[in-house]
Image (tube, rainbow, N blue to C red; front, side, top):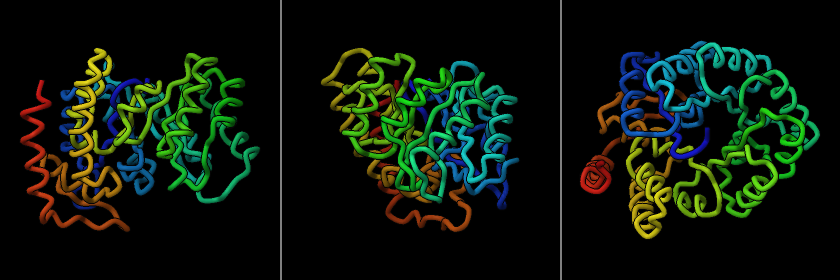
Length: 298
């Protein structure tokens, strides 16, 4: 499920509301670019700025467009567990393939409290794979290998983690768990180290830049799978250049502006975010677009 390139999509708005027609075209674009999956309503989607109803619509639209060959992992995270359960039910109804869940948000919690929270989610979702989304820079609470181990021991539907900690040492500790639990999959949100993480035993990436420029990510993964490691290394260098040109995923407004230059959406974001000034970005993106067409086209 977390193998390969999972695009952490952006959300397209028009007059403050979801732009359904443009959203369908965008998800079809991702499908055509051969991504392996879509991470629905993750960080770069502005998911926590969307209503429950809007997130439910994204769960439904994404799966209906990308079809059965592209996996949809629905991020059902919320500050309130009651809302999380509502979103999980919506993801099931939409036919999504798995759900993702952040640790408890905003309030700092103990390991016992975190395990209790995850256990409640695992029991509620016993008939569906569950992935934990570890992003301590935003979620406050970090999920470590010890917590993952305890959940793997107790819940068969706990299937893996998306780790955006940027901590290579912590990632390798997660990889060690795969020796005992073969079902355990790991994806990283660490563009600069994508190939290095694959070499270390990680299964894939969940990336915001990959939702704008999927081509270099798909190329690196394909070359890695083909054991063409030197070619993969060179492709990784281009991936870093392209990801860097759009802020490596740290700025949603810049990602939105870049996506607009690829022909989707109008660059608008929701408060408190402010729309980017394309300025010099346009020249940079166009340059890289030309490189992509030359180097990464299939």
